[in-house]
Length: 360
Image 1: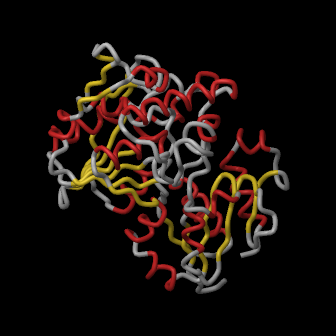
Image 2 (image 1 turned 90 degrees about the vertical axis):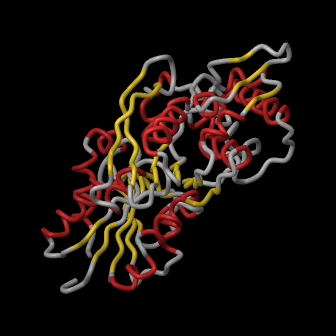
Image 3 (image 1 turned 90 degrees about the horizontal axis):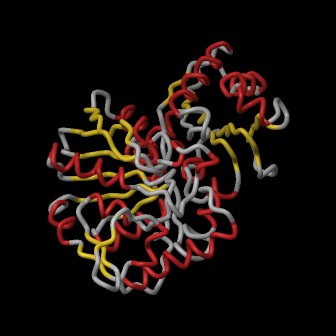
């Protein structure tokens, strides 16, 4: 591929390699083949969200903040971004209170929360007085319909006896009869909120409370309880009709769009617009992208699917496992080059081995 231009734009391989590290590794391996390339840290709203915006806006201000861990009572230090020129805060569910922080054996969306996200938002509002808030919604650990975020932002929750409920999480949604959100709305007054989601999902049918609660560690016998708890809260607020945009990040999208007037967009599409991919795709002869698992969901709003919509001249997809064997130019590590266990134990070497095996 002498004189050809190659652009690397990959999602993270969840739990192993960041988008930024994938770009670095692929670039190094291509250089050994005498192929020059460029890369960006990429995002569709989930893991790697903050890396992507640090890559897009070099020199953006990084603010560290101590927030509640997504399960239990412990606190940890995380960060968000502030772009002074536009007075915009970039903040990520995954990086603030994501499921990646919880060991697999401890994951339970009935008791996990996103209170830390609310704490980080409040810190950003009080510190920077921003005009705009951009929130990446992927990678959440909870299914509390955003109630814990509201609580951290000053919303009050009450039961049938008009007693205040604290420590919101899915298990407590069944007790809520009314809320008082005026303090939260006052705090966020004048701030435009944009949600960038890695997927559009409903709340109740193959959505946040059932399908995605299992991926967050819920036991099958508890799914009905999680769903019933959420339905009670949903109905108590006067909502009865589900929407395809309500279920992102365990229902945080429902809370922000319906109660705080936020706008929700597919993160992958918005990211590609921000980097002007419409122009870039014409400048590069080959786009190399990737994801941990290539499957039907990949093509339904994730980064790879959005890239395909731009009709690149040539596209190569790298992945850990490929669940769609009939799709062209998709190269997987498992099972051809390594077992799943081997690749998870040494993900960098697995990716390097994959690049070496491909004729580019």
